Length: 337
Image (cartoon, rainbow, N blue to C red; front, top):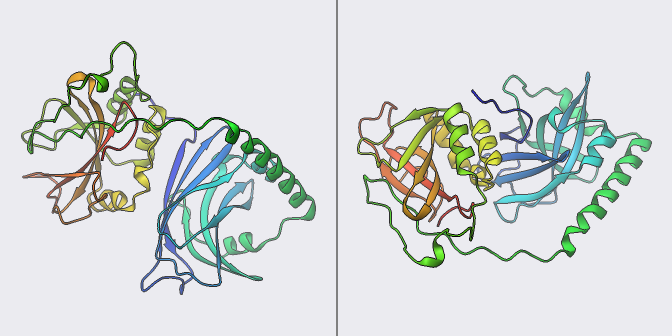
């Protein structure tokens, strides 16, 4: 069996720690970390944090031998409850602190006002790691002047490096993908035979490696047939390890922030699985498909328009009425709407 090594992505659902920062109910957050070239990019989905005289910050806490080091990733806005996709800790900053990306253990969202700091949300990236009050002191601790100077210099170098790509010409957006195919239990896949949409003579070659994706799914997950009248053009796998699936997607060239949607996590935790599948249609209309389990079509809909409901009967999972299917085009690497 092929194994996945290294740190490509990590996920964590953040839980409320210090109360009083929610809007009516407890705030929620979901954090995803991507790592390459020695840097870490943090994407955060935040919901229910109240606005006020606070500055919300995301900190990542790393192990460093028998010590812990907290590094700020950036500030988080609360005016719009969505993805904060520009929080990055560069390789130079990590090196200045003497840590590596794979040493990250915790994430914390702090609320700061003048010289005070609270921790509304917290999470760990390992199940056996729990909150300890000593972590609060790690966040409160001030870096020595010499180290702070190194970090400042590293951030300046990072900013200069990041300024270079902005000078390059902006890439043209790709055309919208074809309408998504549905399971046979609903209808046959809709096909558009327009010549401009066909992949021929090497025009519009896929960014995503479907052969690699198929091999990794087959080697890492159990094949399943969730639909009694399943379409033979689909192959399905039962997934209970979201981090492993995310790494497989990353390695296969599928880089969409679909797992930033907390409702996918709700389906995973409620039914202990999600579906990952491949659809191979005519004219090379290939799709990677994610199935989010739900009670019925009024329950846990992950997207307003970018999904469709397919019911199941006689499922082995209690109270499972069907799946919300989300399609990703293997040609464009984008979610199909």
